[in-house]
Length: 257
Ligand code: MN
Image (tube, rainbow, N blue to C red; front, side):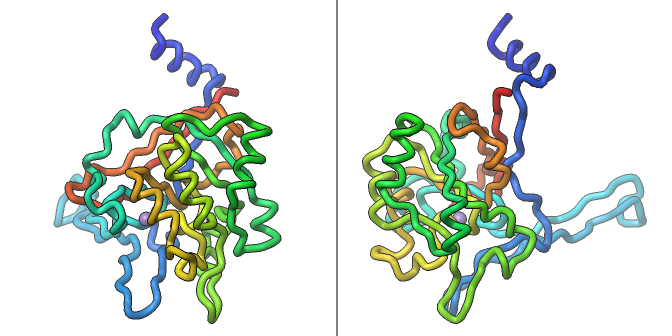
């Protein structure tokens, strides 16, 4: 049999499971909230065009309103000033949208400290136990934050000092982006950076280093607890928005059972 026929029969037989890593899109999907004086994205919304009525007797359809960076989404290099000469989201090669993924689980640490930031040593420790980071693959950073995704306030976890959610240190972000062979970082939080990353040096180091290196981000992932530490194959499918800085994406993982 061919490889693809084998894959389809494995999916049919249940020895390969398709795991959806995507948050449902609705008006209550949590969105980023930047402080004054910065501009913010719109939330996701539907506007009905017709629903089997005078406006269209046999058909139901909607207009969608969304930002590029709403819900589970893909960050393209041009999203950040460091990547301004890089790819927009329509220019990302399809070949790069199918890639292996590994999962680094810091959910216990993030539960104990919502401002937890991953350091190089944590990744080296993970590599000792699980092998090297994948060439051309994703590092998925599990923090348990997806459990909060049903509620905007809980998800952003902000107080008078700003949001508190886990992320990566500037040193770790730089090292992963510049010294390792991964294609990008995937997270469960509203963005790839920690809630407090506005105060890091440089600010928003994940965005700065990953996108500056021509790498990618995936955010608001869920079900990372259903992936093996290594071995999953991920299909990320941002819309090819011409000139776009990112796009909502359906992210699926193929997992051997
Ligand atoms: Mn984004």
